Length: 434
Ligand code: PLP
Figure 1 (spheres, rainbow, N blue to C red):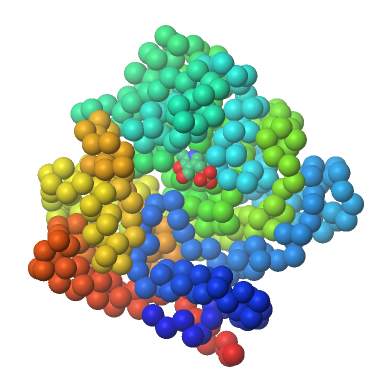
Figure 2: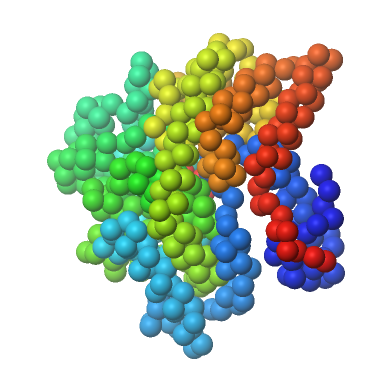
């Protein structure tokens, strides 16, 4: 694709171009990649120009250790305003007693939540990683599995859903101090009330890791965990469509513990440009249009999952209630790794993913994960998602080691180009001139 016309943040881009042409080229190359293909990674989205403007602002310069009105450095009047506005928006949008916008990422938010609620060596019950949980939910290669005594709950082999009776049994047996729900690759709604009742029964804290679906909650497309959880951790860059970063919501009684766990316990100075960009995203997410967006994200994910099912690719658990679907490719006889690589050749970006009880190792995986956050931001609806499903199904079956497969992938890439030309990512502003 032609990269002659720079992105919409033109004046800054000119500055970057002249100061550092190499990095400027990377930025343009990435924009071309976004514009040229289909982005179906379930944890990604396309932030608005307003969010990008806040991210690219001079707020990045400011040291602001502490919280609004209680900083360790002078000169914080402006950033105090940004954070205060953002915190008010977060509390109002989610109906939370308290919010913290300083976590640098979802993993950092989770680390702070652990620090606030449990001591090293204490027991934590969370979804197993191979069944859809996250690394920070007790994996041995992560602080959560190294410093805490993590017990995992699986999904059922027959339904591929959480078995709440089994979670209750595990909680009764292990008496965890903290129970975590929320996942990275679980396409269905989670029964937060059931988790609350299990946590209450064993006197555990309940943390909901809403990293993936907090945007759907913001838009009212799925039920909120906020009334049930002691602490809700989230990322701001997935369906919520904000800057890369983390956020914590909690009951007012946990406010001080959470704030101290974020700073000074697990982090130093906050990224104030990111905090301001989170505030912008929260304002955008409070608009009625975002509710329509969130509902469309779910409709699009259902259409995609149904389309793939019709093409012989089974959605784990039979479908989706959220923004993502997990697809079992065993019947097709193609690994997740190969499917990801084939789709990439056809300009379709998605990721291999383990499916529950996966016989393959994680780097091979029997499945793929697809999400509709980006394509919905680009304006695609059900008719386009039916086409996307067909294109994925064709690409997964096209073997690039054969002449026919290579020709097929080239043809699919052409169809992708045509589709995204109608629904461009970051459409170029007409008013821009060099
Ligand atoms: N929690 C869950 C459920 C996630 O899916 C993710 C990332 O995808 C995280 C936490 C970590 O977020 P980050 O990559 O921002 O650290």
